[in-house]
Length: 243
Image (cartoon, rainbow, N blue to C red; front, side, top):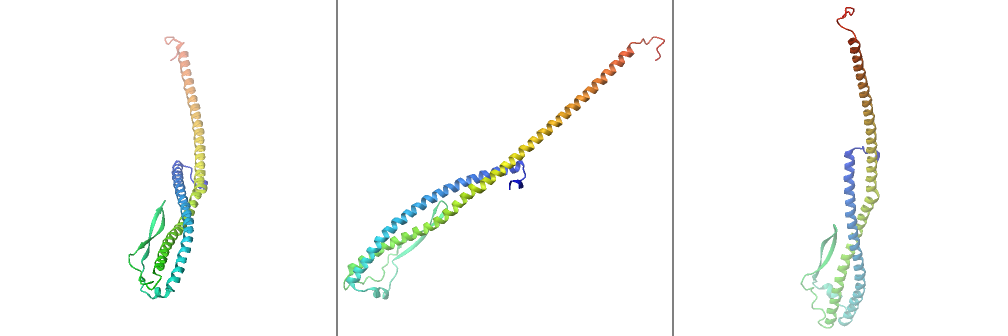
């Protein structure tokens, strides 16, 4: 790549700007990767703790269901035949963590009855109500776990992409730019040395030419002076001198 770049001052300035941008981008992506990694580890810990809570909540809820069925009989068909409306809905939103959009689920109570309030009037109403509360608590834990699991997967993909970009800048892009800068700098230094040598030779030639011209002019002056001295040795009034 370096041998395809013209070794000019403009190219040198361009690649210096590229190196500055790549270095700054690498620093920002490194900080982003660190933030994502910290949040990723926090989500993993939350998932571990929530799964432990969910295990206890599941066992408690199904045990209460068994107790309610024992006290009130099998009321499954009554629930299915009844006019059941949702008393809980799941609402989704997005949370922004270091530029990564994370889906978050939350539970919203509708405030309406579920249509099975008449269950347990003949007996076992308390057990059924207790079973409803236990499964309501289990539902909250499941919604939280679903939100954490979805965020965990999204965060994992974003962290992988960010790490690949950081590694590409650190191991490929920045070394290539530095190699190109080294090539351009060495070529420009070589051109400067060649120009210095050429200018020195031209200066030497001009000096020798000037010295030769000065010597020639000096010799001409000496010749003129000698001629005048020769002519000055004769008397112009002498009859033997023919002018």
